[in-house]
Image 1 (tube, rainbow, N blue to C red):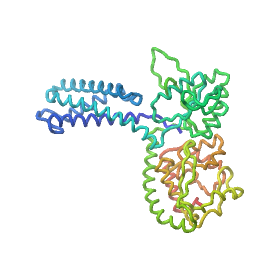
Image 2: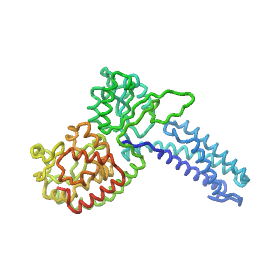
Image 3: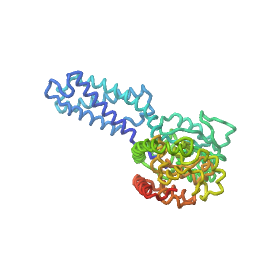
Image 4: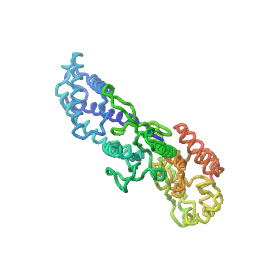
Length: 476
């Protein structure tokens, strides 16, 4: 699943700039005239001044995209551009008011105060926004783990370009050198994590979302077929690939529209490309659902907690390490429905596993307590997972997160089901989960969900889940 780039970040900065202009004009008028929107000159129309200023500023952005490279600018460069843009804004606004024969209705001091205040506010807001971006990406869990895959012809330039980019949506986890590594542990300050022979195994077990592949033209090099086979395997895992393509420089036509990482132009291959707005809407749905779910969780803990502890001494909650989106490890919470030594006793019961494949399921599992049977039958044991949703480890709807031992046995195809954030419920849960005994069928349903994901599908699955919980179907 590839989160398609959008201009949402720049639109937010543009909105903040418009707020700065509005606040600066109001404060400038108050400092000069002692009133927010009026002056002693009855001809002064504050609404007109604000409207002209905002229109000029939006027009400047339409033609120049003033915030296009905002994240690559240093503080001094930022301050210079803000000063330049505000001087242009002031000049064009004054010319428009002159031709409207209204320039004399506005105090020169109002314009001067506005220029000073707006430059100050914009500079502070831009710096605070750039500081907040990494925090926002961490909170919403959308920072993408990126692997660089390159031969030595391009490895140095690619590593330098990517380290120099200030793109908060990416975290570089290392570089794979397709030539001989010569025993190197680091390259250009990045950990060397694999070579051509170990790349597939590393990607299968690593927490990885995307990879940039910068190698000699696969259609020209002798190793072309081997590289294509590696890329095909990575794509099968659900990893988004950005493949470097040769782009000649034409002096007469400098504009090129492709994905760009530093000086490298790439074509992006992904199983699915989703606009960031849809993923944000999904996250907001998760937060709203998690907030409501946590309220119920607080009540259930008071009611159920004592019963769990009275039947079987131990903690009320059970925390287990699970594998989440693209290999991220997190602790998933449930109400404890088994005896405290359940994990140790699991080895004795493996020969009674009713599932065909990597999952373990047993209908009359002796490790489950009487209270646990009730919790599982009513699905109440799942409520603590609303904490995982609140943290961003899980979503309301997604794929089932595997255990560490299950994940260790995954094939490349199986990992594709982890290319989406795991969910409290999902496609296979509403497709008769107690009747499905084939792990490959679960994988097929999860992949079908990923391939056809939409907000509407999530809502449909949520409604089916609620109906199944109240009818008691699908849970054992």
